[in-house]
Amino acid sequence: MWEQFGNVMEMVKRVQQYVSQTEDQLKTEKIEITSGDVIKVMVNGQQTVVSIEINSNYLSAENASLLQDLLVATINNALNKSRELHQEAMGKLAKDFNLPNIPGLF
Image (cartoon, rainbow, N blue to C red):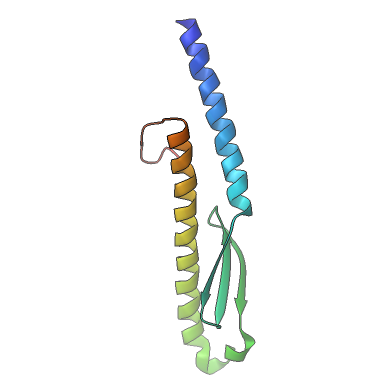
């Protein structure tokens, strides 16, 4: 019985190490989403906005509402792509360790 417990604890340690490595890798993954040549948003694989660039040709009072809408849409698109990347990485982890599909596990 204690031998099985030791095996489980070893697997838990390996999973924790793999999750930590995957999270570190996701920090370095960059996803760039643009709205034409107006806005460019870069996020990493952990849904953190890394940078936002706005083409200065579009910076004017007349374009303020359009820029705000484009900024929201572009950031949301980038974050969605980042979540997909994160889910793929964690799905691979679950598959590699033959873990059951438990919603919210990772």
